[in-house]
Image 1: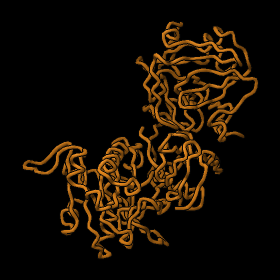
Image 2 (image 1 turned 90 degrees about the vertical axis):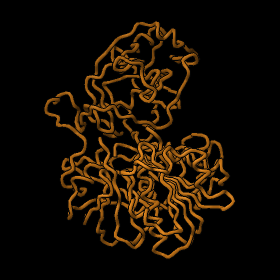
Image 3 (image 1 turned 90 degrees about the horizontal axis):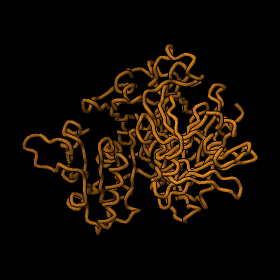
Length: 83
Length: 201
Length: 230
């Protein structure tokens, strides 16, 4: 199962964050690389959605939706800023 | 309630023949879907070890030592929290009882740890008494890396996210410490028969 | 759903009438959600095939063991409703105001969002120079073939057919590699905007190849499609 990219979770992020997020720039907390979220390495086929830094592979974001509640973990991002 | 798509059934089969074997909310699949939260690790067998970690104490096996342990072939049904179930899957592995006994370890809970950083928590009672294996073969062949090879945990009576892929050991714990998915709201125990998908279920 | 156009034996373009549709940008996509009577749901993402201002459509390839694509391409009838979310996307989008030249590289159904860009370019009368490199298995698998064959002179379309070629085919007949890219792509000095779309392995090989040709990474936008049993 090949990984996709942040474009594939554009709709999910739109729903969870209430805004278009693919162009938002995330800075990886592990390696410092900054990139638009569209460029993250995304794994969709899991109990939740995991986005990883394309430079170092560390997890930058996890989204789990259960029973109408979204749990979003952004601890892997040092910073999020609009493009 | 969502809009119903006229004529849409999805990929599922009828379950009449399997009633009693399929937990609530599941459908039977003939595929073996690959679910992953990260890239497939590829630890060379010469570097692979499996460990039981008990505080400062560590009992480890190299791949050759691990493969020299007594093994069992089991046929079990597996149930993924994403709703697919696969019946009569055939595995070969080392019983977790064998590993824990060899380590002389005893604690109420374990936390499985894996290549890639994945973890999952289980009561020790649920990985002993012949209920769990460290499996290295599926369907008569060495376990494929995308399915967790060289070895994965196999705990068929719980949802399959507990059957941690690329397992490298079990850390003994006094408390039930949430692993990766459990931290994000998945159920700490995960009994498919009580449909314990999320915490609070 | 209002109507369909069969593009190839396996590929269908599906048009929707979406109430209160606010328009979209070329390159954006829609999320489609299907719900069975017992509540079972499946969701997939499809790029919008139409240009901004045209009736909304998606182009769907029917995957053999797919779950959603067989429904969309075989079961869905005119008048049926469908749940859509979007339009989604702000990264993999292009409009004439973004300038060019443009390099569009498509692998299989990755051509869909790029076709939206081409139609948008044409409809706005933009003269941004564009090159499309489109990799397909065979000529019969080429989506929008007539439209692409009839493209204007300042749209250079290059096909490469990787599995089978018709008799007399003089075009490329292999997977996109460094040499093919070097032949077809704008030179790095032209500072082109590149959009690459298709399966993950295709996108990574092409994007890597463009960077090796000297394209700055920020000029290479990528969208990976998965064969997630769609």
